[in-house]
Length: 471
Image (cartoon, rainbow, N blue to C red; front, side, top):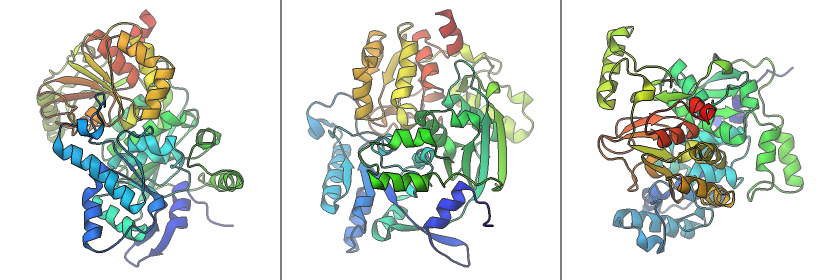
């Protein structure tokens, strides 16, 4: 009898070229995704007289730096000369090396972690790496996916492999049905609040349980996207019929006999019965509520009906100091009900929550009123934008006073002209609420698309359940 293996172990072992006595493994990389900040890597390999070894296994997007305001005039309309040059260079470099680019103006342009799945580039059983920390998103398709630095990207360019140290394994099981008004974003925030931002440090997470199995691929991507916020090296979910139905027929998906061969392999990937994990965590879906962050870390998350925590009730001096610092930055007072916090801006989008399912959820709430604050809706890709427009979601948002924009990372990264002003408080569907993440001095509250839309039409943090029931 062969030893029972986890899904992670099966994929890792299949891709291990060699492992040293020191525990370093050279992993074969099936696919690599990059974005427009890659100019330094192309410049480096050219200086060294090297070439890209497997260009057909590398995919590029223009997402982090591109503006999301209307794009009439093409690249020449980008006002910032440095950003304009970056966007130009990713086009020049990818064309020179034969790399597929979903660039500025391309009908399929969008955020890397939205484009990969919707194009069928992301597939089960792969090692798919990205030049971005939220590459863990692709793990929703049972791939080993994590973010790497640009020096590591250069190594893959030249060798199509990468040295890595094998992480430990962790299973996070969620069981039961999520209550009314509760989404995948609430579930992952609840997980992070429970285990902390270092709770999965050094581990490859496998999300399991009936709650996960019942989720759509969009919801699974939201879960895996924020694995890094829990400290995980990567997050992944076993493939099933939901996975296969999503992939089938997409541009880069296997076709014909290759599809049948792929399915045969993919169906063998789930963890074996009896496979052991180094760490296990469980969560009851019935206990998850609409979540919102109050501080400057994703673990600073509470139910929207809670109050701002009191540092005096912290278990130790370090925790007390951390809470005090967070409340000082966020300009919140202990004991204040979270749903009394007024906001200045709303942002709906990002690789966490910029897919069609997210926009549908936000639109269902937006139709209940009219935005009282500046609210942006930024689709995760141009195909998502077209689909939303075909369904009339754009009209719902516009009629409700929301601004409908083009695809990109936008205010999630705040390195593209889309950012908060100092002191502005934002209800956001992004993945990080660090100091200045959405603009210097900006204050971010993380939440689901429905919760963000509710905040837009009330002008404050709001329990979407009460709003929906009231209508």
